[in-house]
Image 1 (cartoon, rainbow, N blue to C red):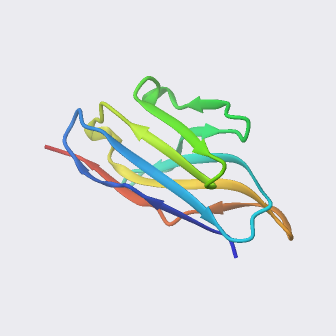
Image 2 (image 1 turned 180 degrees about the vertical axis):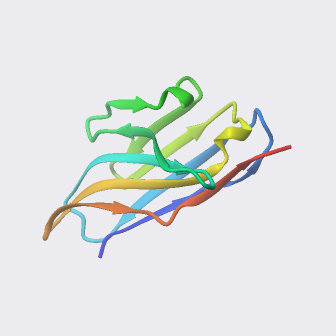
Length: 119
């Protein structure tokens, strides 16, 4: 059984930084693209950043220049370094990955981690 587990969320002041982690575990053959999404209260879930298994990245306009997505394929883990945080970054952050197992490939979601930016 494959699991994605996020960690690293918390309360931070505006202008501060946080680093989120997303660790995949289980009988994994391959992990293709890995994604970070976020969902603020009363709003839809939006894509924040994506990284392919080749290391290519893309970002939402709202986080470009402040957030950096990376991954360590030896640890089946993706990261989201968030700098210069703003109150509008407050949301539950979810990890998502396209993972191949013996049963084929499918999308998996983590349980989410809360990020609150407030003074």
